Length: 366
Image (cartoon, rainbow, N blue to C red; front, side, top):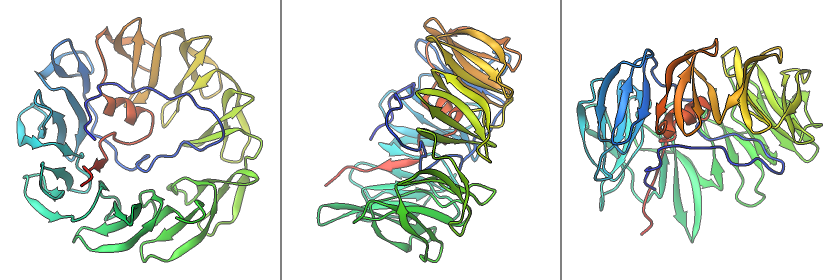
């Protein structure tokens, strides 16, 4: 699909699920700048609102491996440097950001290819309908067999290291990837050698974190497991659980709060909605239709006032006042006054802790 959307919002959370994404927390952008949308241009500005460059792009990612993916006025994708100059011309109808030195691109009528930062094609992928950016040396890809979409993995040589046989997969993290069985619809984990480390028995499964733990859900509710599948913490009393760094965001009786990694409540569920702390000292919370920020003790640090508010990236947070966007610091002071029409989707997606919005190349079906 083409990524022409400039902003991204949160879907209403309903039912019981874990908000894990295939790309969550696996590719971090460079910092030191902000990307905003004016009336007729995309702008790269400093933290003090000084313009570094402006260009008539329809969309723009953050910078990864020194390059930003941009969509020009003809809806073609290319890559620019920190001055806004094209390093790789806008000639692709689909493209991902760079990860581990490679980006997936597609030209109409061609096979998808992985290019380096000079635009040279390093490998091509035949018969795929989707492919994701590389993580831990592997890229997830999807193919259609007998009308069924199946997922597997390839390495940087283009070799199929994990046969396409799963209903869905998540990226490798800490040497393990969550995979969904095509028959049962349940999730388990495979390692890099294609061995099923944990059988497919979970209704949902998040990627493993740097501490070697993963959040999963079985028929009894949420729990945290180690690499051997041994339960460490039971979180079955909550309706929704979402990983958030050292904490978990939790929903109980349709109100949101946080618990720690041992399941102990640290901020009582009392908010209409909330977004992540990540590594920041503050997190956005929704109170009677307006957003505020709380600290890690649950105290209101920035008063309820915003039409929309996102988590901090490098000590700055995107906030919406009325119909326009600006940025605040961790003291709640504006460093960029509200004046911009929109914030690109990639920035907001990263702020939510969900990785880049440009991590998957969806290809046209033949």
